[in-house]
Length: 349
Image (tube, rainbow, N blue to C red; front, side, top):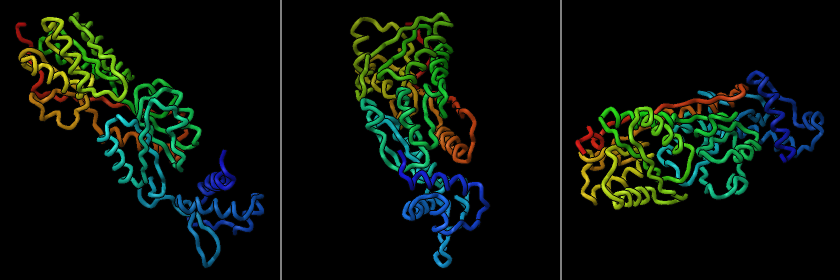
């Protein structure tokens, strides 16, 4: 429940938003009488508005005057944006998003959390004017975040099926393109490596890969690692490929790892067993992590533009801060295939 001064601040924000910049506000004493609260409550509410750029103080006059919340662009350095991110997510994207917010005039604060804990425990009690939620978490987290009463924009496939503002990648399309790339190279015996804990993005990538392979009547199998949270995805992927090789002769010539970490593990496993890539087996990853281009061989992978996704999140946030009252705002992004040396034409195996 909000304190009286917070509730009063919210009410004043709505009134000030309808005023022209430079409008003189009533004296504190008059506001006390009109609102029926104490002078402390009014002063504290006005302090909040001043911090957020809704008003400025004219000490010589003793009144507050409304002013534009920003002078350039929509953002304001006093508008605080809370970034909630899984502690195992892509830190590179978080940095791009942080820079994007700063460049557009916001003050970001990143808070990392452990998915194994309940949202009630990991949502920080800090003031924020908007929340960016960077995790495909269970849907019960959304109501907890919405209780904050500020614009909420999420990132991830699950939210695209709900009444939630979000951006999301076409993860199923990634799987389809991965299978199609291998099929176009002549591979008819395919496999997909699921080396991550069960996530919506991973499920979508696998489903797209299987659909495209089956549509082409290709032989396909799923190498499931039954991974758990906070596992080393590289080691998990490597171990599963080693186990597969110990079962007998390699029965696929094209492998799609649902992200680059698994592909790295697979490449090491093939190297240790003297299986040449891409001569004997082609390998595709996803996410184009740092170093993917410098592996030996350089890894064929997929990339979602960090800049596009960051701007997409901030665009939706700004729309809401500007007053867009549409039921839901969502944006989808497609990945780009980056062909390198780890994929090649199928041989006679």
